[in-house]
Amino acid sequence: MSLHAWGLLLVLVLLVATPVRSTIVVGLLLIHSLGYLVVHRASLEVTPFDRWVLLLLCAMLLGRLAPFVLGDFSARYLSSGLHMMATIPIYLTLRHALTVADMARYRGCLEWGLILGSLGGGVLALYQTQWLGMARADGFLFSINFGYLNAMLVALSLALMPGSSRRWWLLLGVAAAGMAVLLSGTRGAWVVMPVAVLLLAMLHLRGLGWKWLSVGLVVLPLAAWLSYHQFPEVERRYQQTVAEFERIQQGNLNTSVGYRFQFWFAAVEAFKQRPLVGLAYHEREALNAELLEQGKVSAFVGNSSRGHAHSQYFETLATGGLIGLLTLVGYLVVPGIYHARVFLRRRDDTFALAGLGLTVAVAVCGFTEVLLQQEMIATVYAYLQGVLVVLSRLKQRQPTVPAD
Image 1 (tube, rainbow, N blue to C red):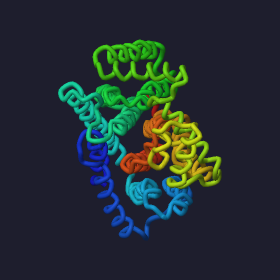
Image 2: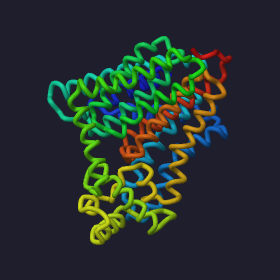
Image 3: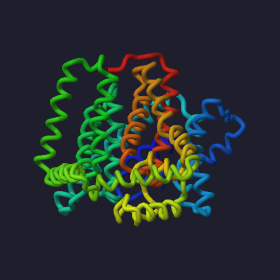
């Protein structure tokens, strides 16, 4: 399974630092996995636990079937769900082939992938903003996706630091990816970093002690202060946010943040129209146009394509309804609960902690953007969930060793 170990490393290295899409690597791993499963079909046993994992990897697709039918069978409704479901053969292959002896190699590839990918993303963000003079770093993606993906790298790296022999390299990666998040100007991703640090501190409070907790309480505000004063891009974005909230307090919702409030209002109105499965995109466009005529939303929102809600939750509410929300719980809440329960039972299982960090990062980012609608993000999220579940299950076979 060396191919899959190197594939894991490449997925993370390519994620934000290069124009080559990580989905290419996942696609190659998928082809190999299909062949592996055919060859080993006689010895492959799908357990009840596996069936739950497969169901959750299919959850997004299931939640989009009704909008797919309502929307004249357009493939755009199913694309992200199909990408997530395509990682199932990879999960089954790893679950069948990996043993406890493979854990160290996979952890090494996971950590070095995070380190190299984070450093690459940080250098790229610095180059784009400080050398090219770009207002927001966007890597080879949109700035908002660049910010969210780097936030995922921050959460994963922080989670893997306890007990790692590469903890200082991971910390350097956290700093680089964190800088990329700030320079991307993606404010929704900015929130992930303090949330991830606080979550890790809470889970490791007993092991960290008051010394490291005090250091963290000093370093975090200091890092934020330095970023604000050293990078004009961060200062400008922060000042823009303050100005937008001041305008909102004055009743002016024609700002970036204000538009999001209007999109969320429109999404709730769409949900009211058909609570069980929500509205198709063309129906939401028509509804938003009506809301514009009634003076309830601005022209920017009323004329938006597909009625895009700028929130994973409100988007699912509007196009998916109650069924969509139920499936969202499956792919965005249940994994977090599972990883948390596993880690609380066994504190040296950093794979479970990494899974929790990944889930929380995506869940927090989902408040302000429909990030899992982007095929690459959906693919990488599902792929990493599968890998971390397999490695965590292997970890549980080892004798308990107290985490550092």
